[in-house]
Structures are given as structure tokens and as C-alpha cells.
Image 1: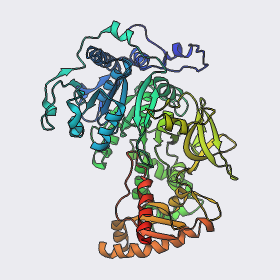
Image 2 (image 1 turned 120 degrees about the vertical axis):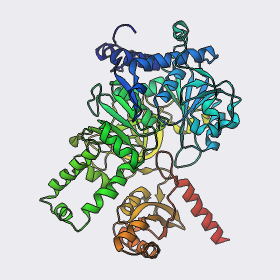
Image 3 (image 1 turned 60 degrees about the horizontal axis):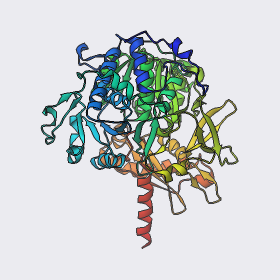
Image 4 (image 1 turned 180 degrees about the vertical axis):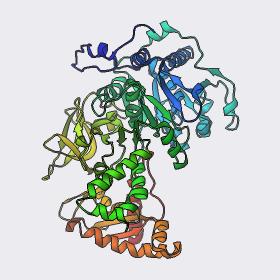
Length: 589
């Protein structure tokens, strides 16, 4: 393996672009895996919950397996620029396959496992993938095109030359990638450069069709490297509990690459993060680091914390008293940290906006949460705060990363404008879509995020909404539906809501927790359904009393089914805006 590559060695490197390295000697994935394997060789990098130590993977094994698999890809004729899709839940094998692909200059196309068969086939076609690595669970979604592609079984990292049907895919014979002879000279000939494409990631946004985001080795690795010592101090051997899909750049960059750069042990659940699995895992693993989308912590707050704070018990009375509130919040915070294993030092929240009331509670409870903001197009981090209480400010994201230039386009009188970013973490563009790429950048090279934001005097960023969701009031006023939804969502029995324009006014679609209402009011579910309809009028009155005249809700409607969401749990707004337009057109016929 050669001489140990220390962080000091990396920091001494002088680059012509002025960027200071922290944990790697070059921003390429072969350099990355070489550095971490030399530094943390025998340490465990990956572990799957309750599968036994013999299934663990060390840092040296990560290097060995990925080099072996990369050598095999070269023997198959894979060349620089070829695309290979990776489809499956997070696992050590997922990372080995990714590193093998990008280490020979090929391009990984990570696909979120929750995507439909139609979406997966569309991505494989649009990206021009020559191969697909898929686990048995999702093989049926790509079975129709498998015969025309190089096929790899992700469960055990095996090349499957002959395809079968969905029933026997798990047992089809093939060639194991992890045990191939490492072709060192061939690998050296095919080393990628920093500006080479590493990933094409197809977004599943709130506004419709997917786009292939082209990210380079530099984009991803610089973003992770820069953040290794800014938001929290991490020590080799500390544990991460990973519950998000690695195909999402938020989890991949911040939840995988960054911890590996610092020698952490990443633990996977090995199954869906249901409460029955998550709670024992938290107790046994006792993680130091976790990443989550807001929905998880919001559910914990509504189910376990809110009933205590808003009930009639002694704790609720103490929480309402300004003198004792601080003590109560800190006590609840300690109990919450105990639930997470009592060692948590960084609970990252990203992928969607966090409810402000929930954030205020986390802040008052001294819970070690950290808010981050970014997009797939920015690899992803643009701004964030640390997990220390002094770094947190409810309602604000945090400071902009030091590499980035951020400006606000078309600012209004309140200082709110569209966030635009320029920096080494910003994508090359959209794959095969020069038209969309041109639209996404200003003439000065700033990427237009589509998000509306505000920057305060301390250079902290806050998000006000999306440009496309912002609604113009009757007098040209800017209405941010996300702010109205936050007010609605904090009311009793409300699970979630969506505010959409309708007939020159605003309609609120509201999902009520009927079961909770029935339990609290001690009535039947059928009676609670009727009460929910009446309760909507109360919600409208309550919320409108807190809003300006131009942003008041005109009508409310009960949302029977949960809203359709993206894999990062953001509501697919375009579905409901179109639905409302369609309803209005039918009414006018």
C-alpha cells in the first residue's frame, strides 16, 4: 500500500487554483480511496446492522475490492466516459461498485431505488448506459433491457453474463468482481482527472421531469473535503448510522464521502428504516453522526414531544412558565439524545425545509442538529450551520461555504432574491441538455438555484421559498406558500398541507390525522372524519388571523390521501397545481 498519507501531507500541497487540500492529495476518487486506505487501513469502514463482524469491510478492503472490480471492468472493455447505472439500497457493495466505475474514468449513474420501472428505464436510455448494477429486489424494473446491457448483481458484486427471469436472478452464475487480479498498470493508464465526470444524477424534483446533473470528481470531493472540519470535529472510529439512499448526493457526499475522509465507521440498517428496526439500531450502534430529511425528526416531535408540551400535565405547565421552560426543554433534549444512543454529536438535516417550530424546540433542547442547504447541482452543500448550540439560529440555514460566491438575483424591497451560486462544487451542466444548462446559468457563470433567499449582516442564508412556487398577490405582492404551510402544519391534528393558487386566491389542501383526532376527542373514526371537515374552517380562521390581507387563504379542502413525495420527501407540488387547474377548467366548461 505504500507510505501512509497523512492529512498534514495533503495540507502541504500547493495548488495553482489556491484551494487548500485537507484530507486527499488530489480531487479524484482513486486518490481519495488510496488516501483513506493508507490512513485507516485496518479500521472498519462499513458494517451492516446485525450481520456479524465477518461481513464488515475495512478501509484496506474497500481499496482492494474497488481496484479488483475496476480491473474487471477494464477487461470487459469499459472505457473512459462509458456510463454504468447503479440501482439498489445503500450498502458496502454499492460504494465498491461506484468506486470501481469512476476509478477507470467511466461514469456512475446512481438511480434512487424508489424510482418506478418507467423512470429507471428512461434514465438508462437517456444516459446511454452500457451496463447496470442492480440488486435482486429491483431487477424486475430493468429486466426488459437487461439482455442488451452488461449486467452486474449488486447484492454480491457478480457479473452475470446471461440473464434469466426475475425469479432466478439471485442465483444466476457469474464472475465475482471482488476476487479479480488487480491490473495495476492498466488502472494507472486509465486514471481520471479532477474535471472528468464522475456521476450523472437524475433529480426527482417537485416541479416535474427529471434532469441528468453532471458532477465531476472535483465537484463532489472538494465539497466533502472542505466540510470535514467546519461543522463538527470528527474522530477516527466514531460511528455513523446511514438511513438515506446513497444515490442521493446529500447522503453520498456528506453522509458517505465526508465520514470516510475522517476514518469513521458507517453502519447500514440493511432494510427500510421502520421504527421496529431503527430503535434497536440506535440503542446498539449508538451513533455519533446521522443524516436525515426533516420528515423523520418532525414525526418524532409531533408523536413524542408535542403531546407532552401541549397537554394538561405538569411538564406542559412548567414548559409554559418562562422561568422553568429552559429547564424543561433541556430535560426533554437529554431524553431525546438518549433515544438516539446518547453519543450523538451531529444530526444533519437537509433535502427539504425543516419546520421552524420543530427547529425552535431542537434549539431550546440543545439537540445537536445542523441545517444544510444545497442542491444536486451544487454537490450539494452551499450553506450550513454547525451542531453547536451557538452555531444554530432557528429560521436561518447558516453561513455560506467558503469556496462559494453567492448572490441574490432580482432582490425585492425586503432583500429577498433568487439564490445564485458560483464555485468548484457547481455542476458542469445538464446531460445532453445545453438548452436547460444555458437557462440555469447567468452570463457571469452563476448557477440559478430557483430558491428564494435572504442573506443577513452576518452572511447567514435563509430560504424563503421557490421561485416557481411563489405566488403573486392581487397587488403584485410576493406570497410564499411554504410560510403559510408552516403555520398550518403546526396546528393540532394537522399532518401536512399544501397551498396552491386557485381562482385568483389561495386554496389550502390539508391532511388531518383522523386517528389521533378520534383518540383525543374520544369519538369514533367516522365521527372524527366529520369533525375534521368542520375543523378546516377553524384552521382557516386561525391561520388567516396571522397573515397579511393579500396572503389570506380563500378556501380549504380536506386531503384524504398522503401527498405524493419525491424520494427526499418533498411534496410533488406540480401534481396538485395541475390538478387544481384541471378542476377549474372542468368547472368552467
